[in-house]
Image (cartoon, rainbow, N blue to C red; front, side):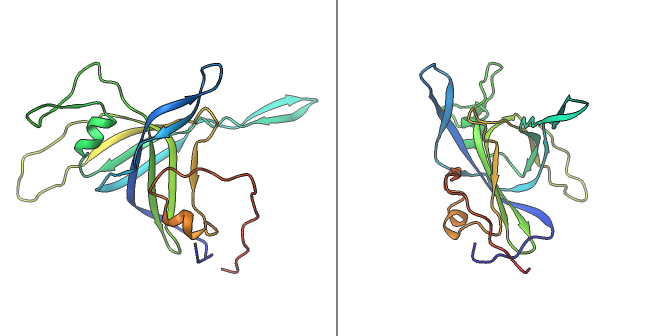
Length: 206
């Protein structure tokens, strides 16, 4: 980004996009490697996102002390709350069927699809953009209430699980030194990290 000012706080959620994993690449032994994503699609009505990290660092003790620290990054789990799940997300990701009469049908043998999730947090200096590369979502609960004197908006909540790709990639996010090109194209497709010529972040007096 053009500005190099750092965020002091993080709040708000907007610009939620998803890209379905259509297929997986394979190595010579038939093991999954990298995913091939479909087009990026908007999931409007974002309310909140709450995710917790899975896995903790574990110490390996030898020679009467900590000999090695094992990093166990198992991804994230959490909840995504939105105003209303779109028909496209319900059919492509949650496996529901849209019949010939325009009715969404849910079956007990539905297979859930995996997808990348891209989203943006609002901050005081720049809006941090994230991508989680391999997500799955469980179907939301059905909830409503009788309208009384005041109307309470009912939202839908998806339980999310983000796991590492076979390559080990879990998540990426923008920083104050992210280039304008990468930042502006963030939601067009899941970001492919460039770690071949990593450079030090630019210093900032802010």
